[in-house]
Image 1 (cartoon, rainbow, N blue to C red):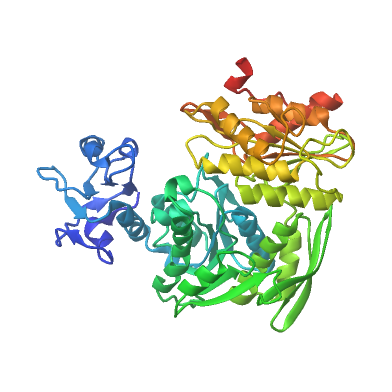
Image 2 (cartoon, helix red, strand yellow):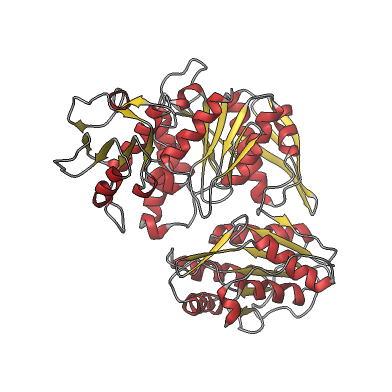
Length: 534
């Protein structure tokens, strides 16, 4: 078991704290949940949205906490107490110190954005492997450390600060030299990665999402921007500091983000826009994937990818630009790495049990992501847009979109997603997606109102099917040869929340179950959800 003196954890602590003199109490780990405190841990308490961690200090001490960090004035404790101004900010620096500042020994590439983060991270990971770099990956799906794959949990954004530093330390111990860290707005706003020591920062896009937490698009965009501001506080590293911001020239966030990148950082942009530093030209789409030429200063290289859709052209460009301009990877090698990624779990993932139509599961859970997903499958099958918003009969080449909108989250998104689908899909099937403690019927009514506002007629252009498994069954049963059935919103996720209970759920399993029933093939059983009983 690692023991680090408490005094050492504060030796490079960049924030104010009292008392100034810290004892050498041995610390065995960092805990932010009193229920998980182990003997010798440092317990860090903060005031959260639903509970005040300071109330759990006695429980943490009873479980063996050797010292406490908090924001409130506390006296009479039987262990050392260090008061800080902001415990959430403090935890990332203390965790980094406990694990020996692993980010300083790695070249750290952060990827943020509303949509496409996980795909871009996986593309960049393949590029780095193709270049012979010893790279690791921390995403919302898992952490990849050499041959070891660690699950990062259900409904996870960026892992908590102690987990991030733990993963980074394992990468250093494994002899890795580079790491890609998927970085969410939640993680940035809550300072989980402030001590990650970023060298390259990449943005995919910044669109409507998480306004329930951030309050406004401007606040949400500012949270994303912190990734680029953190480039300037990275410590000098023996292997060098690229300090490069990789921006999307096609996205509305470009002007704002480019304005906040200051020396010693620099910026480069990618996009389909002719003014981008690294551009995609001669793009072609097919059900088998995408092809384009990536052109930048001094190079032009053909790119082939099994991924589909214009948004994946952008994701490929983001990864290639970060590798070539930020890490010095040869463009031809980068293109070879992009071609090596055949897919990302739950991202435009095709499910094929021999049915005469295309079935896809995608993570699209924002209005923009739903728009680009539907547009991508239309281009893939060469299908024209619906004409009237009244449904389209049984003509071939229809897009049947199945999706919901989460409870206790951004409510405006419900209307917006239904509006997008009413405009772009032939048939929309509105269903459950983590209703939590909200009324599912109420959520579906808000979505139906959005569909009606764009001319959709219920029963023709859209239907409501509360049970998600039955909604997927409904979609595959109505599909004709040449159609696309796309289930959006859950992707790789492994659970769905009703009330306060997480039920095991995987859209891919549900799609296979529905298809197996349809074609009479062997397949899994439809997973259980409580809506099956209604």
